[in-house]
Image 1 (cartoon, rainbow, N blue to C red):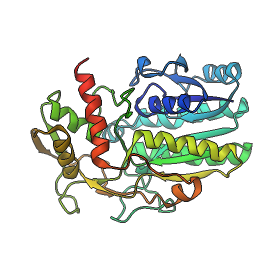
Image 2 (spheres, rainbow, N blue to C red):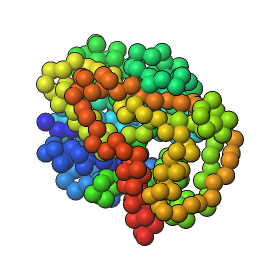
Image 3 (cartoon, rainbow, N blue to C red):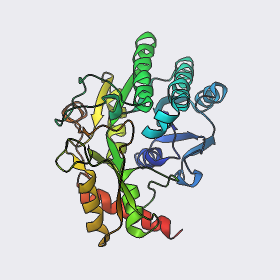
Image 4 (cartoon, helix red, strand yellow):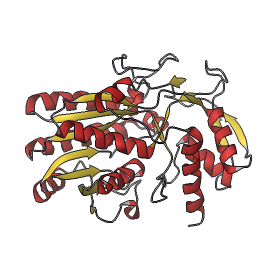
Length: 326
């Protein structure tokens, strides 16, 4: 069996490649390198540069490598950008995934695991959100992912494709062994940006809104370590290979941290303070989104290994320092 990992040169995808290779899997990576880096792809994987929307290319890869499973990470992921440029998001996310799914079905791919997002839920109350919570995305990013979920379910029902839809909450941190991390240029990930401010590669950290209905006025998010998330994908793959039914699962720890909580964690890890400025709210940001991971734990038997916010921040900071040294 061979796995095709799309977006495998990006932040989450590169960690997935490491985890799959560590587990003894045969891996092919497809990435257009718009936000990813070829040197982030671990040795041992076959790397191909290209777009998932290129049906001739994906069809050829599926046939030539005997692809039996696809783990689909390739996407545009910046919420404010999606509000400003929705065409890009419906093209790069929804339409491109439809093209990939068409070739997957034509090529006899058996299993498909999709990187979805908690952004499909939209604004929720402060309680952990279960998978059956109504979906009402606040941004084209969230809407583009929800459309893919619908397409995947319909296509799977018609063609016998087995799938996992994994709704990520906020992914953070870096490989504990220091092999890869978040290297995206101009990244907007909260913990990465705070770490950059702490080591001086960014002049200041901006809090986008401090008037939310939360205890300290800043947004609250559930952060999951990227290596734990990669492990979720492996567990889902094993579940499907063992005859388990297709599932839609939240990926988070069930605990929320505000922006100010994260800034404090970065200060602890760095042993220093850094400039913080207050900005306006960003379009598409929900005030508080926390996962209910009960089904993830019960269906897959998954247990976190890195669910400590100080530990998550420490790995992110270590990677940022490494980048700062070139």
